[in-house]
Length: 67
Image 1 (cartoon, rainbow, N blue to C red):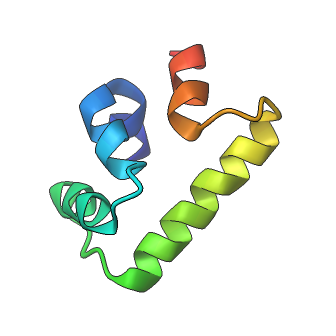
Image 2: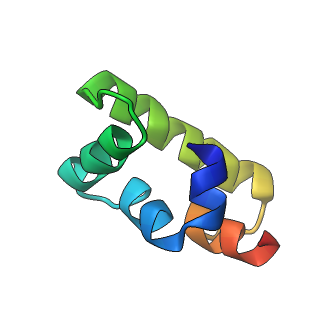
């Protein structure tokens, strides 16, 4: 899933979307049953990556900067 998020901007946008149903659909595409607990963990991981990047930007912007 991470590899696809790095290389497929459309998938990355769906994965980082604020709409949980859009996120759920992206997870299903990756073969993951997207329940609320998994989506919560996904969003916490995205927030952690943003903080570690130290740029204050969004996950998508940070990924775009390195790809």
